Length: 199
Figure 1 (cartoon, rainbow, N blue to C red):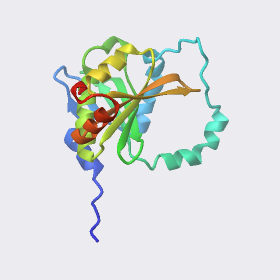
Figure 2 (cartoon, rainbow, N blue to C red):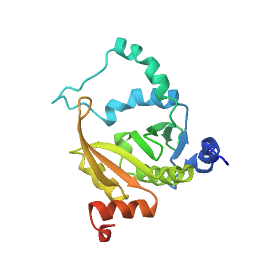
Figure 3 (cartoon, helix red, strand yellow):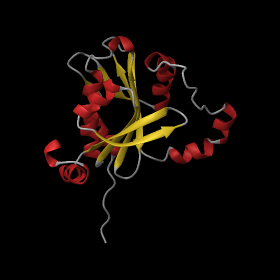
Figure 4 (cartoon, helix red, strand yellow):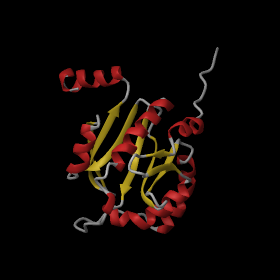
């Protein structure tokens, strides 16, 4: 009985990243600690807390208690990227991981407000899609606030479809989007939940 080889993700990643945009921005895979260091300084600027509905937050003590579970979670395939400007300063980030054996979950992506709507996210998403396809994923998923029309419309235009709705104690109501990568899987989704001429 022959075994199917496991993809060498690091070698595949090297084919796609670092990735330089025509505008001069560069997207690089980085260690998680480097990505999180920037995220910790930029997150509140990109995603300011509106304050209308307090979200559930873990206490530092509970976070410490959950470290054994975090170690198990880290066994999954994870990705960490930073987006750099022409001067080498980070201006955005992405983190994500395997949701299941078929699906890559885009956990969080952000670009500093002064550089949003410059095509950085679009270029990254398209490159990421090529990379994840090369690894062997068949689905890409993400969650977004139900009122975030800008990102919802953008992702629908990029081939994502609405696949669910979830109420969370952390982030409130979230719309789940999924991009189906193989044509036959996408056609199956549209046959079951819509029409093929909607593709």
